[in-house]
Length: 594
Image 1 (cartoon, one colour):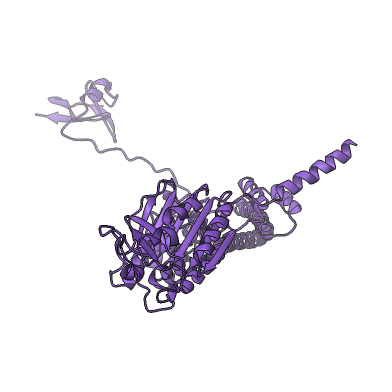
Image 2 (cartoon, rainbow, N blue to C red):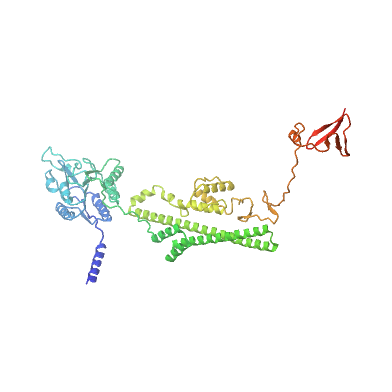
């Protein structure tokens, strides 16, 4: 039983929620009196009434009553029947085209069977404007009466006055409605007459059809446009006028069109998951994303990101192997290994270096694929926004012909400012520019989207070798296009001392045993330095070493009466003495005789 009641409740709620939302009820009564029996017939009122009826029906009014050439009885019946419809209406409008008259400050509408031989007949054969206002008074939101009845009245010329002082005005008199949210619009200002014009419809009716039911247009502004059009059409001889007062909010006969719906992103959840995976950016995360979303636009982006990670891992592994092989080759050369071993190590280094270069190229290719995928994503989003806006513009022009004509009078600036399909997003430009600078050999830093001092130096280096003068302080689209236009390396590969250029990388210089890298990066023979004997400084003659002379004891060859020479020793001759020749290390004596 509970299950059955639950089903019934669900069905009831579904039917309730499926009902259309409540909207304002709008009703209109249109009267056109042309076939007057006792004066000349009018040509335009019937045509004007038909145009206004079509306008209200196109605007979606719930009820539009059209009445033509009404007698006094017919007018009474039409007003009574329309008054019944206004009781539950939000907006009530009465449009009257025909003759009207002003008597002692009161305005009256004239049926087609009126005779109006005397001024007192006005009270019996016409309808006062207050009776019309009484008909629309029950409406809740807006009460609007439009009187295209300010024509030059032929009844006034033949009418007999029972009281000489009674005033019969030219046109209609000014009115002040007592009910709130009530507006009365005259085809001409109080005390003046309106023109029928020379076409099928009067200038006033033509302007009404053009502006009154524009979606979302405030009623006061709409009648302002009507005034401008009528003044222009009549050479400033007829000025429509409105009386009454409305509140501060905009009041429109037709609600504004809903704004064009933004393009629905069917892959919103997929896109959100992709952005989360992009923040982590690991192979297991990309594998999980691809498993969850086997196909789709973001799936292809995820595969490109995963391939990029795999290429980077392969590049790192190949680089490490090449480095190890190069170090082994160098070590064997230094240790003086056999030629066969050195050749084997050199071959292994060459193979690993080729693998490293291939991995580097593969990584660059995957980065290019990711960049191209990102550009495709940006183009797709821009194209969707452009298509949605174009569809909205077409719908607005179809619903509003006047706006369509105005749009043709001025150039369309939207197409110039719309996002170009091949234009990258501003947030992607720094990373894309870093990637392109690395491709042409000018960027050795990280590709992280952070346009820092290292990135600016890289762009300055590109300017130096390409002859361009790009602003290095910012990552611009112009700079990106300029770097992309270069198909090969622009900046030369510069290696540190002890390394040499080998293709697209620097390799360490290996010298054979007994040789080392010189200042000019060439192998030079290692020279063994021998110890150098120190020469004794020559002694100065001006400063004899007295201390050494004093400290050295006399040698045996010069003592007492005996002098020793190379030929032997002998006694000193009588009358002679011994004298020191030079006080140096050792004592040299000579025999001095008087």
